[in-house]
Length: 100
Image (cartoon, rainbow, N blue to C red; front, side, top):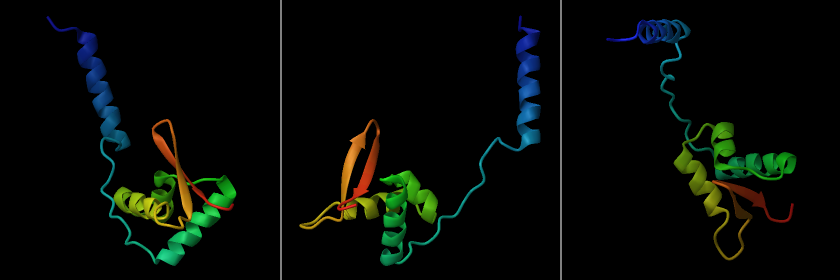
């Protein structure tokens, strides 16, 4: 036989879940990519304040997709004269501006 506690707890949780409207986060549309110069300005100002930027920070600051944020930050780490360096700490990559 089923335990009455399990049923009551599940029913109470379901009511709380729907009353608080937290069962699902709403769909969000991502903002379009900004001008590369504007993105670089955001990156440098954030790095001056915090010392580094992550993909998540970039994504939240500009409202762009995770893929775009990673592509932009990785792009600044490539080439003959990169503007940034990437360092892995745990499961997160920290991007630092060279020379700051």
